[in-house]
Every structure is written in C-alpha cells, then in structure tokens.
Length: 408
Ligand code: FES
Image (cartoon, rainbow, N blue to C red; front, side):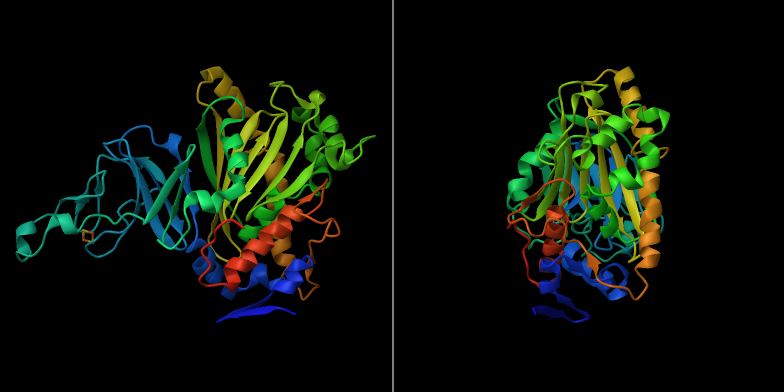
C-alpha cells in the first residue's frame, strides 16, 4: 500500500488507483486547508474571460487560494491581475464582484490607485517622512498571468510550469471550446450561485456521463427539451446503438480530463454543423461545456468557500460576431438548460447537497471504477477514466508539496 503522509492527513494512492475514494476527501476541514495550499496555491487558476474587459477600468474580483485578487483593464488595453489589498493597512480596494471604475479608492483613508495599479493619490501625503514614495506603494501584480485564446489564467506563485506545459495535450480541446468552429466567443452573461457541497462534486459531475439519463430524466420530458428523448436515447448507446456507435468517450488528457461525443443529427435544432458535444475540465477549477443541441457554451468556474460550500461562476458565451437577436435567443436557451431557470443545474445542485450530507456517514469508500479493466487513458460510454484521472492529479498535488504541476 502506498500511503503519502502530509502534516494533517494521509492519502492512500493505491486506493485511488483502484477507483476508491475516501469520504473524508469531501468532508475533512484538514483536506480543505491542504487543498487551498497545495492545489489552488500552486497551480494556474482561471481568472476571467478577456471579453469581460471591454472598457478601461472594467474589473473582476475573486479569491485564489484564499487570497483576494483584482483583475482590471488598464488604459493601455492590458489586463493586469493584482492582489486586492491596500498597501496602507490592508483592506480590499475593490469590494464588488465586477464593475467599472475610473480608479480604485480605498474606503479607509482614501488612498487611490489608478487602473494600472499605481498609487496615484495619498491624502495629506506631506505627513509622511521624506522616504515615502508613491511609486513604491502601488498594487502588487500576481507573478504569473497568461491569456490562452480568450481565457485568462493566473498563479499566485512563481513556482509553476509555463502555461503551455500546464495545459499540455489538453490545449486543442480547450481551444475548440473557445471557437467551436464559429469564431471567437464573448461572455453574454454570468451569474454566481452557491451550493452546500464540496467543489469536487461538480468537477466529477461535469465529467460523469453515467448520471444524465437518470438524474435528469424529468428535465428531458419538459416541453423545452422537445428533442429530449432523442437526446436521452444517445446516452449509454441508447436504443439500438452500441456504446461504440454512440462515440462517447471519457478521456484523460494529461492532468486534465474530457467527456465528449458526437451528437446525432436529430438532436440538432439551432445549428446543424457543430456536432461535437464536449466537456473539458482543466484542473482544478475550470469546467467548459459545449452543447450542440442548444448551441450553448457554458463555463463553470469553481470557487471553494469551505469544505462543504462552493461558489460557482456560471458563464454563458456565444460567438462575438453573432447578431443581437441570436445572442438573446442563445442566452434564453442557456436559462432553461444550464442556467438559473434550468432543470439541469437544479437537479445537480440538489444531488450535491444530498451527497455532502450522505458523505458524513461512516460508509464505504466511494467507487469510481467503471471501465477500470480497460487499459489506457480512454474509456467509452459512462466509463470513469476521466474522473479517475482527476483523482490521480489531485493526489499527486496533495501528496507532493513541491510538485510543479506540469502535464503528465
Ligand atoms: Fe487603505 Fe488606509 S487602509 S488608505
């Protein structure tokens, strides 16, 4: 048995290799603290989409590994990512989730930072001794920031591999999401929601092809899902289809994971060419989905706020060159599917809350072993190669404090 020990926990990596996952990984406060340090504090994390920054002063705030961060578009059209803290006595300089500001004025003593992060004004500055210089007291930029297609990622430590190495062989899948054969995407909207469950539940769920036809069976019968039965019939091979014919894949792509298939023509209503149904999970917190039937792109960004509480930034995106009516219709389809009025998301959140409660019971290890007898990185319909790959990456980070996190 291979058991890696860290100050507050031990992880049996041989169990994970057999598809067994301990309940404490979802419920232990020690695990949560270690994840913040060893995973979110030591790798690339999604910050925002480039299209969220249209005018100088547009900004977005978030936390990375518990540290508040501020991304802002400067007057020079560059997006910078700063630690969101005043140099004087430490309050946040931006308190809203997003917006636009001419400058960032700290609420406490009104020190004011410009859109490039420079300290521009200090009230009664003459009260400081001569050694004080505004140039030395601007906002501090995060050490690593990278834009891939329209996606902005950052790390709070210098000690990460290049973004290209981090992304590795997942780059083509992520790039496909950002174009889906229709040109660059832009954010049409984003809303945040909280669920009372561990962040890993949504990561697994987005890669899980086994649950949809069961958990979402009711949703598929709703009028908005007029093609629902045809869609459901694809799952697990469906009526008369073998799993192979259904083209469904669960795939490890380096340290990241994919679920994908080719949608059948009868499920396509809003477009007829882009048949690749794709879910891409970039470890640890970026989940991107393209649904050909709805012709909707959805990004789910995980922001853990505790072992049993997760904030999700739920984005809908569409082609930047689409006409306004097309964008409105696309956003409407998002509303009744992955969006705030949709059954799919509600079904998932409801089950996460039941999972989180159930996982407190002194039950067996969880079993993520579907398709474990099939060698290699790729499985078929409803196999769990991609979810086991997540746990393999997770245990690698959690067991090796000095891991640099490059693609495998
Ligand atoms: Fe920010 Fe004083 S704490 S200006």
